Structure formats: structure tokens, C-alpha cells
Image (cartoon, rainbow, N blue to C red; front, side):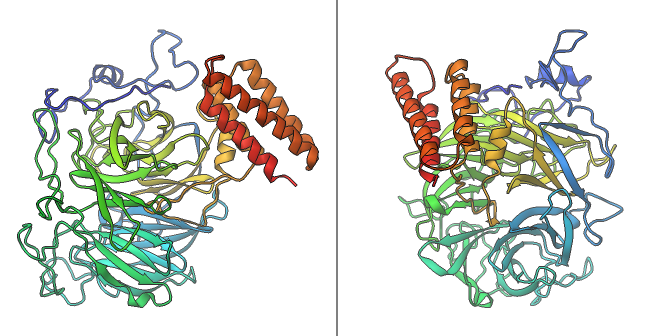
Length: 623
């Protein structure tokens, strides 16, 4: 299966119109795919139709619709389990009712916390094949994105129906303009007892919290910080003092063009408060707080992008001191050495992006993927006639703390007009030596892709269902698909919680999967990205050897010799003999890498050295 490289189009090229393109219904799926330049992916074997010798349409095409019984297609992943949304968290008359939609997921230990516009649900995932419902907390207010830290759970609230006490909002038409009981901001729950979470703080902000990011300061063990990304309307200053809703950079105190930073004392979370509201979009030369993209398009055939006045999502990578902000019209890189005062160090625009939505670093912190939520998540933006560079990922290398564009990646299987589809939330799968991401595409399903070569990303696995409704568009699909401790968890907006495991294939071997599964997190929040590390293990060395074999980085006969040497060493009793055998093998491989670098042999010098290093770690770790 191969996905072609998609580069940024020349500004002014193409025949599209700013803000959208004309759509046409496909008379036949295969014809539409080919005419639009999208790929027909093989469903098995060599991808050839036995009768015609031509390509086979993707198995995701034409799946049957249904809320609980839709058609399914999978490649190189297996659906282990599914749990419907619990009572009180769905509308039986309208499965796409956003007031009950599942949203983001956070993980801790053997618990998965699934957010919702109506509150959150806790599952016990000690057995991923059989998740058990622990409790549901009804707390309306949307958007309900979650993070966890220690005994605390943080929840984003942006809608005006949110109440301080998690109570029901006033009836439609009776909601007052100014309401002292209204809550918009960050809720904090004590989850030390999973079955009985209790709210301990509610930090109000002027624009509420669409998303948020938990950030730790290595030098401050007493506090944790929360970056609040508010994108909603600005509340009245009569309701929350200090809020100024005038969207002008000349208006002192305007709630636009800033983020909020909340400090949470871990010993007294009830004292959480906003400690700074940095003007992260300021122009360093003019001093204007509106220093980034001013809105508009980039010329004929490019996207119409809103003005950058806030961030939709910020992903922090504390171990490298950086954060990546997806901020409406810009992708932004921040220095977070001082977490309470992030500083912008780089920014980019893109002619194909309509709305910069989220960000994911690779494990080395040398790349970042930004997603474009073209259509706002509710529109069918994966039609055969839609540009494959719109509503996609943009992959950037980080070079000298600057962002360098490399390529795009978009779900390679077009969806129907009944399926909202665009790039959304995902996380890394920690395969050593590779950059792999599991990503949600709403009703486009789950797509797992490799971006180790920044210029040539390609899909290696997927799961998809048919539309949630057979004749009308309804909001549905995956909000998030995240890897956590050996499995991929999907928060399905309209259907519930899914759990997957990866299946070995020509794109991902058993050794690579098992090596990834050695990585264990006690807590995982996708917006506070951890660095994956692998313990010294034979399966890690074999994963690197498999990658050399796939890339033909060593002759096939040599691959076999190294594999047998590893087998022999593993069969030896732990001790000096095993250490000596592994040390000798690593030394020989290091010498081979040197010969490759001098041009005396063909091969992959860098990966041979990585393999040798993994074997040396094994030797050093043995008794």
C-alpha cells in the first residue's frame, strides 16, 4: 500500500475558490477516486483484481450505514471491544446530538476518562478486551475535553449553558444574558476515588475553555499549570470582571489575542487561579498584540483562513521545552522553559489550511504535525472531489527552532457526503526507530500512518465504519484515537468507546509491535506529550533489525546471520558469556556501519548504528 507524496501547491495555482471547492457526486466510486487523483488502495495481497488485473477499490468504500450495525472495514488492526455510551449520554432520537457527543480521552493507570459535552465517563481498562464502566458524571457545558494529573481531573467548559454546580442549564429561551451561576473555564475534579469524583475548583475565564493543556515545570513540584485555549464569545464584564469583548488590538484589555495560564497548587487545588494571560501573538517589532495572520486567503485556489486571535489547541512537550500551538491561521512554536510565561519563537502559515486545529511532535522533537479542521468537524471534507491537501495534516521538520514544511498527509480513502470527515486528534505509536501516528478522521475512521520520512508519509493500517445514518448527515465518527500502553482507544462521538490492537503486516512486524508495547505510561494526556523510552530488550533489537530488512539496509544473508546471533545470545544464561556475545555482535555491526559510511559497502549506516546501540544496551544491562 503506497500513499503518494503531497507537497504544498504553488500559491495561486489550481481552479478552486477561496473557502471551498465545487463538489460533484461520483457516478462510480473507482472512477471518482482515479479522476480526483486519490489512490485505490489494495485490500489484500498485491492489490490486483483477479478478473481485470486492475486496482481494487478501497474496502472502506460503500460501507453500510447504521448507528449500531454499520458496515466495518479494517486493515492491520483488530477491534477488540466496543462500549456504547452509557444512559444519559446519548439522545435516542438523534445519535448526532452534539449536546451528548463523546469528546477527548485522558488515561491514568488502568482508567480511561472519556469526555463529553454532557460530562465525563470513567472506564476500567485493566482488560482492554473488556472495558468496564466505573462511573458517569453528568456535568453539561461542552466541550468537555479532559486531562488528568495525580488525583486531579481537568475539564474544559465553553458553552454558556455550563453551571458552577454542574447542574442543568435554564430551559431554552430562558437563559439570562448575565448569570452569576454560569460557568465557563476549567473545572477541576478530585478523582482519588474513581467511583465518586467531586468538583473541587472552577476557574472562570473570559472566553471559556475550548481545549486546555496541562504543563509541568521541572523546577516547581508544588504546582501544575494549565494553558487554556478559549475560542468562544467573550462574556460580559458584568458577569466576570475584567472581560473586554471588543475584537480590536487597540482596545486595552481585550480578551482576544491571548491565552490564559492557570496555576494549580497540588496541595490546595481549590486555590487554582489565572496567573498570566500572555500576549503570545504580539509583533516584536511594532508591539501590536495582533502580530500574526490577519485573515483572508493566499490568492486564487487557496483557503480562506480566519484571523489569528486565539489558539485552538496547544501540545506541550516539556522534556524538550517546547510547545506547538494550532492557532486559527497559524502554526506556532513556543518556548515553555518558563511554563507560566510561554514565548513564541516561530510561526508559519499555509495556503491549504482553513483552520489550524491541533499538533503532535515526533518522539525526538524534530518534527511536528499540524492538522487542518477544514469545515469545523461537521462537514464532509473527504469527498473524492476535495483537494487531498485541504483538511489534511501538514508535516514540518523543526530545524534550528524553525518550522520547515515537508509534506501533507490526508486520509487516502474518500468518504461520502453523509460523513463528516477531516483531520482530527491522534497520538504517536512508540515503535522504536520510526515515527508512526494513530489519528482520528471523524467518520473517516482511524488511520495509522508512518511519517518517518517527512516527505513521504504513508498509511499502514485503518478502521472505518459506514455513516451513522443512511440518508441524512449526522455528526459522528472518532473525536480522538490514542495509543496507550499497548492498545489504541477511540472515542466515537455517536457510538461510544472502541479498543483496538495492531496486527502484524508487511508494514509493521510482530517485533515492532511488541517493542512499542514495552512503553508504559502511568498518565497520558495527548496535549502534554511524553517522550517514549524503551528498556533494553531483545525484541527492541529485533525491531531495528526488521526495519533494516524492510529497507534492505543489509544484505538478506547478513540479516539472517544477525537474527541467529541474537537468538543464540538470548538462549544463553545471563552472565559474562551473554554479555561478551552481545558486545562482539555490536562491535562487528558498528564496523559494518563504518564501511557503509566510507562507501565500501551499500546499506543503511544510521540504522545499523542504531541496531548496534540497542545490542550494546542489552549487553550493558545484563547481570
